[in-house]
Amino acid sequence: MTIWIMIGVIALGTYLLRLSFLAVKKPAYPPLIERGLTYVPVAVLAALVAPAILLVKGEPSLAANPRLLPALLAALVAWRTKHLGLTIASGLLFLWAFTWLGR
Picture 1 (cartoon, rainbow, N blue to C red):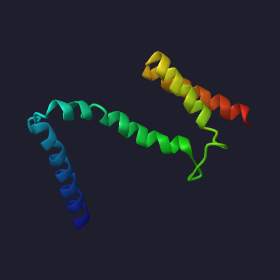
Picture 2: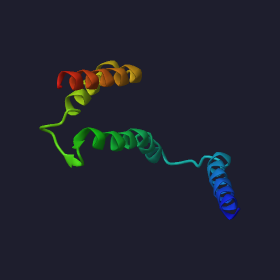
Picture 3: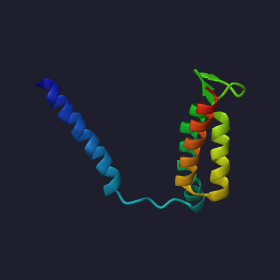
Picture 4: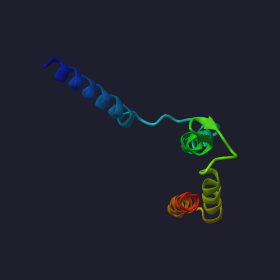
């Protein structure tokens, strides 16, 4: 029974913490900080994607990396089209094709 009380307290705490960000009025930041905050999602995404592309078995590898060329081709598609769905689809297609051809 104690475990369920602990789970309930943690769930309530998590809920209240998330609710606090919605209930509090958005603070007014200086324009320089506002402009800098617009780059946070891109930086976080790059930090998540880069290790998946650049590391092979936990070690940095550019020579024997089967994900590098498909990632570069997907980046080219992103740069040319600026379309997220097309970028993801082409990246998956390139990765599948290079994996299939490399067998």
